[in-house]
Amino acid sequence: MSFNETDAKPLFLRGPSLGTRVFLFAVASILLMILDQREHHLTTIRNTLSVAVYPIRALADLPFSAQEWLHETFAARARLQEQNARLRHRQLVIAAKLQRFAALEAENTRLRELMDSTAQVADRILVAEIMAVDLDPYRHRIALNKGTRDGVYQGQAILDAQGIVGQVTRAEPLSSEAVLISDPSHAMPVQVNRNGLRTIAVGTGDIARLALPFLPNNADIRPGDLLISSGLGGGFPAGYPVARVAQVDRAPGEPFAKVSAEPMAALNRDREVLLVWSRVETPEFVEAEDDGAGEPPAEPIGDPTAAPPAEEEPAVPEDEPE
Amino acid sequence: MSARQRLWPIILYLIAAMILSVLPMPDWAAPFRPDWVGLTLIFWSMHLPRRFGLGAAWLSGLALDALKGALLGQHALALTIVAFFTLKFRLRLRVFPIWQQSVTVLALIAVYEFILYWVDGMAGRSVDGTDRWIPVVTSAVIWPLVALFFGRLQRRLAFE
Image (cartoon, rainbow over all chains, first blue to last red; front, side, top):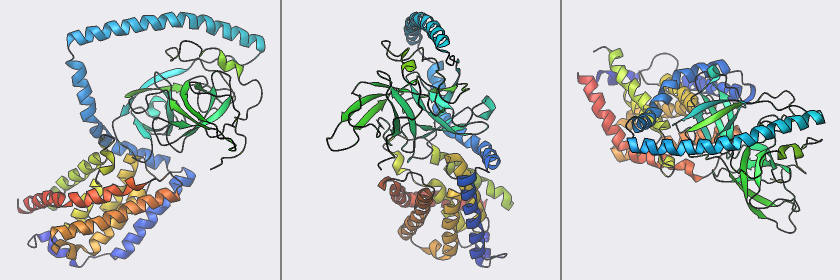
């Protein structure tokens, strides 16, 4: 290797010494990090960079989307027919449910008018694909193939057919990044659908589990309860299913019950998700319509009205115990 | 024949390394993913220090930050420091037998991961666990292959 001409020269590097240069680069990185962390002044730089690396993301995603495309294109006729029949059947069921839903919605609006409260606002929805890139293995982040060009904004709620998936943390021109509700740094206001009890659901880092750490021991909650988004805080539209309570441990002598819940959404199996624009005029509570294709046909509709008659504090009795 | 022409393949390999570092892997395998970009940079700053120095490391770090959605500058800082140590000891590193190089790579990637870990901690992001240190080992294990592969490439580029 020693006869390689590029080898011989670098014995004497010209310009500022290596130490000086590494110092400058390190200072530049640290400045960038501080700016990025504290101020969010770097949106333009970040957007430019993200557009520049978008092809890399797209390339990483390519084998998967190509495989999917092939799968779709060369699908067997019988399978397609079978799928078609199944979907038609399902659509019929959903349409039937929707009839009832329309009536209920009208009734709900009328009742709300009687009560002089805010009317429901329809949500706009856009389908986005999750790009097959692994962002950071230590956090539950996903990349979506829609960005500010499609009107995506930071903090936007993301759903799938079963429930809430997460929210957008960073909207870039061509793509955006979102955090899943199971990320340990994520918390969202929820309420128990059965009785309107409000609390906070915190991610645990386990994709199949959320924790409800702020419920007192005597709280009326039991396994099987459906948790829906309460819409408090204005981040998520209200009334979408979030999780189902899996386990309630009440240790006498502990101030809080240990409650864990399983997310309704297929957090790690989704390929497509829905971005929701909920136009929130008053950040308190604008009831969004319940998900038409929502899970349990038995009870989800109508209950959201029961909960928030007056006060806003989610049921967080004290500050975090941890 | 010009130097610029010979640079292109290396940039392409750098991009390939970035793709590899975000390519989805099954859940059980994801923690074992070697730090491809780190390995690529170590090799090229060892062997072509005039072209692949701190600047290249910093820029690819920045690209990696944007790609992974990390704090802007996090990977840039880590890769710059790694490139610095590689450049500092490159003459010694190049004459090491391959297993000794692997041990050095182990140390370099450990520095890299430590900086990432440290920045995550400072920024108040959740840092957990031992999974973080697995890439250090896998990177060192895979280093002989990387060195062999890039060594071939380098010879071909040099002689064409």
